[in-house]
Amino acid sequence: MIELSKAEFAVMEALWQGHPAKASEVVARLSDDTQWHEKTIKTLLGRLVKKQAVSFEKQGRLYSYTPTIGREEYTLKQSRSLIQRFFSGRIAPLVSGFAKTEQLSQQDINELKAVIKEWEDQQGK
Image 1 (cartoon, rainbow, N blue to C red):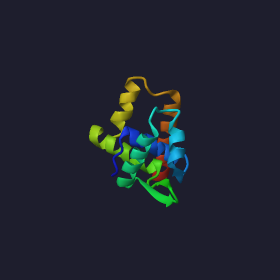
Image 2 (image 1 turned 90 degrees about the vertical axis):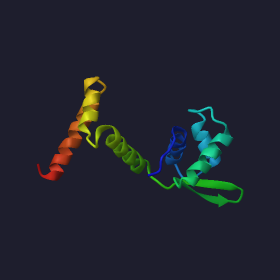
Image 3 (image 1 turned 90 degrees about the horizontal axis):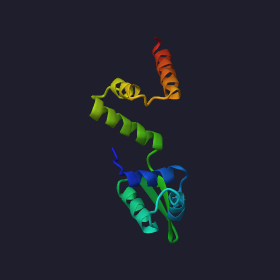
């Protein structure tokens, strides 16, 4: 699984917003949220290419970047990894931890109930 630093993930978020994207477009997307220099962002794009999280196509003097992994795919793998490492693969302790510290909103609870109901319906329960 591809591991991304916090900074690399921010660059991926900018690419997931719309791709292919030139480095200047990625810089523009990140300018509101970060104080990174253009060279820093280009370095991060280079790292992502080396990690094979991003592909590129040269168009004259410019490079156009495209993510090779989707956001949902990446976040799902990272979520599974986190649950495996910290909760022995069990989701219930994670959710109950949030519930006990009152960090679940009513909307969160309703969404979880809907997901569980959908899963039960699919399982024929």
